[in-house]
Length: 193
Image (tube, rainbow, N blue to C red):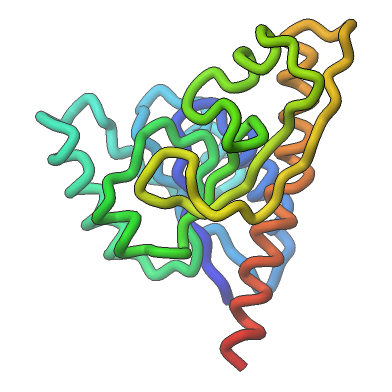
Protein backbone atom coordinates (compact mmCIF):
# COMPACT_ATOMS: atom_id res chain seq x y z
CA UNK A 1 0.00 0.00 0.00
CA UNK A 2 1.38 3.38 -1.05
CA UNK A 3 0.75 6.18 1.42
CA UNK A 4 0.12 9.88 0.81
CA UNK A 5 0.32 12.84 3.19
CA UNK A 6 -1.44 15.98 1.99
CA UNK A 7 -0.56 19.50 3.16
CA UNK A 8 -3.21 22.18 2.62
CA UNK A 9 -4.02 25.62 4.01
CA UNK A 10 -7.45 26.71 2.90
CA UNK A 11 -10.52 25.52 1.02
CA UNK A 12 -9.34 22.04 0.10
CA UNK A 13 -11.10 21.30 -3.18
CA UNK A 14 -8.01 19.54 -4.57
CA UNK A 15 -7.71 17.62 -1.28
CA UNK A 16 -11.31 16.40 -1.58
CA UNK A 17 -10.93 15.39 -5.23
CA UNK A 18 -7.75 13.43 -4.43
CA UNK A 19 -9.41 11.69 -1.46
CA UNK A 20 -12.45 10.69 -3.50
CA UNK A 21 -10.28 9.52 -6.40
CA UNK A 22 -8.36 7.11 -4.14
CA UNK A 23 -11.24 6.18 -1.80
CA UNK A 24 -11.73 2.78 -3.44
CA UNK A 25 -8.07 2.08 -4.17
CA UNK A 26 -6.47 -0.96 -2.59
CA UNK A 27 -3.00 0.28 -3.57
CA UNK A 28 -2.96 3.96 -2.54
CA UNK A 29 -4.17 5.52 0.71
CA UNK A 30 -4.31 9.08 2.08
CA UNK A 31 -3.00 8.62 5.61
CA UNK A 32 -3.14 12.20 6.85
CA UNK A 33 -3.99 15.80 6.12
CA UNK A 34 -1.79 18.41 7.76
CA UNK A 35 -2.94 22.02 7.76
CA UNK A 36 -1.28 25.14 9.11
CA UNK A 37 -4.60 26.96 9.50
CA UNK A 38 -7.12 26.05 12.20
CA UNK A 39 -9.89 27.87 10.29
CA UNK A 40 -9.25 26.11 6.97
CA UNK A 41 -12.31 24.62 5.25
CA UNK A 42 -10.14 21.62 4.36
CA UNK A 43 -10.52 20.40 7.98
CA UNK A 44 -14.29 20.09 7.54
CA UNK A 45 -13.71 18.18 4.31
CA UNK A 46 -11.31 15.79 6.09
CA UNK A 47 -13.87 15.19 8.86
CA UNK A 48 -16.63 14.50 6.35
CA UNK A 49 -14.41 12.13 4.34
CA UNK A 50 -13.08 10.32 7.40
CA UNK A 51 -9.44 11.31 6.73
CA UNK A 52 -7.10 11.63 9.70
CA UNK A 53 -5.97 15.24 10.08
CA UNK A 54 -3.70 17.36 12.19
CA UNK A 55 -3.82 21.11 12.67
CA UNK A 56 -0.37 22.60 13.21
CA UNK A 57 -1.57 26.17 13.63
CA UNK A 58 1.14 28.51 12.35
CA UNK A 59 -0.19 31.32 14.54
CA UNK A 60 0.67 29.47 17.76
CA UNK A 61 4.42 29.31 17.05
CA UNK A 62 6.92 31.97 18.08
CA UNK A 63 8.78 31.85 14.76
CA UNK A 64 8.76 30.37 11.28
CA UNK A 65 11.71 28.17 12.29
CA UNK A 66 9.87 26.82 15.33
CA UNK A 67 6.86 25.97 13.14
CA UNK A 68 9.01 24.33 10.46
CA UNK A 69 10.98 22.30 13.00
CA UNK A 70 7.75 21.04 14.55
CA UNK A 71 6.30 20.19 11.13
CA UNK A 72 9.50 18.35 10.17
CA UNK A 73 9.39 16.25 13.33
CA UNK A 74 5.72 15.38 12.75
CA UNK A 75 6.45 14.39 9.15
CA UNK A 76 9.32 12.16 10.29
CA UNK A 77 6.86 10.35 12.58
CA UNK A 78 4.80 9.36 9.53
CA UNK A 79 5.57 6.60 7.07
CA UNK A 80 4.60 7.85 3.62
CA UNK A 81 5.64 7.55 -0.01
CA UNK A 82 4.55 10.95 -1.33
CA UNK A 83 3.85 14.38 0.15
CA UNK A 84 1.23 16.24 -1.88
CA UNK A 85 0.89 20.00 -1.54
CA UNK A 86 -2.68 21.03 -2.34
CA UNK A 87 -3.05 24.73 -1.72
CA UNK A 88 -0.43 24.74 1.03
CA UNK A 89 0.42 28.41 1.46
CA UNK A 90 3.77 28.09 3.25
CA UNK A 91 7.20 27.70 1.70
CA UNK A 92 8.82 24.52 2.93
CA UNK A 93 12.32 25.14 4.28
CA UNK A 94 15.29 23.71 2.40
CA UNK A 95 16.04 21.07 5.04
CA UNK A 96 12.56 19.52 4.66
CA UNK A 97 12.78 19.68 0.86
CA UNK A 98 16.22 18.03 0.85
CA UNK A 99 15.19 15.33 3.34
CA UNK A 100 12.21 14.36 1.17
CA UNK A 101 13.88 14.96 -2.21
CA UNK A 102 11.69 13.73 -5.08
CA UNK A 103 8.90 12.83 -2.63
CA UNK A 104 7.10 16.22 -2.58
CA UNK A 105 4.89 17.45 -5.41
CA UNK A 106 2.90 20.63 -5.88
CA UNK A 107 0.27 21.92 -8.26
CA UNK A 108 0.49 25.50 -9.47
CA UNK A 109 -2.20 27.44 -11.41
CA UNK A 110 -0.01 28.75 -14.22
CA UNK A 111 2.30 27.53 -16.94
CA UNK A 112 5.54 27.80 -15.01
CA UNK A 113 7.97 29.48 -15.22
CA UNK A 114 5.34 32.17 -15.87
CA UNK A 115 3.57 33.56 -12.80
CA UNK A 116 5.23 31.72 -9.90
CA UNK A 117 4.07 32.53 -6.38
CA UNK A 118 0.74 34.03 -5.40
CA UNK A 119 -2.27 35.26 -7.45
CA UNK A 120 -1.10 33.51 -10.61
CA UNK A 121 -4.55 33.19 -12.20
CA UNK A 122 -5.33 36.84 -11.55
CA UNK A 123 -1.98 37.98 -12.96
CA UNK A 124 -2.44 35.93 -16.14
CA UNK A 125 -5.98 37.29 -16.52
CA UNK A 126 -4.95 40.92 -15.95
CA UNK A 127 -2.11 40.55 -18.48
CA UNK A 128 -4.62 39.28 -21.05
CA UNK A 129 -2.61 36.11 -21.73
CA UNK A 130 -3.80 34.04 -24.67
CA UNK A 131 -2.97 30.86 -22.73
CA UNK A 132 -2.51 29.88 -19.13
CA UNK A 133 -2.91 26.53 -17.41
CA UNK A 134 -1.57 24.32 -14.65
CA UNK A 135 1.81 22.88 -13.73
CA UNK A 136 2.40 19.84 -11.54
CA UNK A 137 5.99 19.75 -10.39
CA UNK A 138 8.43 18.39 -7.84
CA UNK A 139 9.17 20.76 -4.98
CA UNK A 140 12.69 22.12 -4.82
CA UNK A 141 14.27 24.71 -2.56
CA UNK A 142 13.22 27.72 -4.66
CA UNK A 143 9.53 28.51 -5.06
CA UNK A 144 7.80 26.94 -8.09
CA UNK A 145 11.06 25.96 -9.82
CA UNK A 146 11.07 22.16 -9.45
CA UNK A 147 11.20 19.66 -12.28
CA UNK A 148 7.93 19.73 -14.21
CA UNK A 149 5.94 16.51 -14.23
CA UNK A 150 2.97 17.74 -16.28
CA UNK A 151 1.64 20.96 -17.77
CA UNK A 152 -1.79 21.47 -19.30
CA UNK A 153 -2.55 24.52 -21.36
CA UNK A 154 -5.84 26.43 -21.37
CA UNK A 155 -6.84 29.04 -23.93
CA UNK A 156 -8.46 32.07 -22.30
CA UNK A 157 -11.82 32.97 -23.77
CA UNK A 158 -12.11 36.76 -24.09
CA UNK A 159 -15.67 36.53 -22.74
CA UNK A 160 -14.53 34.98 -19.44
CA UNK A 161 -14.31 36.99 -16.27
CA UNK A 162 -11.76 36.14 -13.58
CA UNK A 163 -14.21 33.87 -11.72
CA UNK A 164 -14.84 31.82 -14.87
CA UNK A 165 -11.10 31.50 -15.52
CA UNK A 166 -10.55 30.30 -11.95
CA UNK A 167 -13.30 27.69 -12.42
CA UNK A 168 -11.67 26.41 -15.62
CA UNK A 169 -8.24 26.22 -13.96
CA UNK A 170 -9.73 24.27 -11.03
CA UNK A 171 -11.35 21.81 -13.47
CA UNK A 172 -7.91 21.10 -14.94
CA UNK A 173 -6.37 20.71 -11.47
CA UNK A 174 -9.10 18.34 -10.32
CA UNK A 175 -8.84 16.23 -13.46
CA UNK A 176 -5.06 15.84 -13.67
CA UNK A 177 -3.65 16.01 -10.13
CA UNK A 178 -5.04 12.65 -8.91
CA UNK A 179 -3.98 10.96 -12.16
CA UNK A 180 -0.41 12.24 -11.83
CA UNK A 181 -0.25 11.12 -8.19
CA UNK A 182 -1.45 7.65 -9.18
CA UNK A 183 1.04 7.39 -12.03
CA UNK A 184 3.96 8.51 -9.85
CA UNK A 185 3.12 6.01 -7.13
CA UNK A 186 2.48 3.16 -9.55
CA UNK A 187 5.78 3.86 -11.31
CA UNK A 188 7.64 3.83 -8.00
CA UNK A 189 6.09 0.40 -7.30
CA UNK A 190 7.24 -0.92 -10.67
CA UNK A 191 10.75 0.49 -10.24
CA UNK A 192 11.20 -1.46 -7.01
CA UNK A 193 10.36 -4.86 -8.53
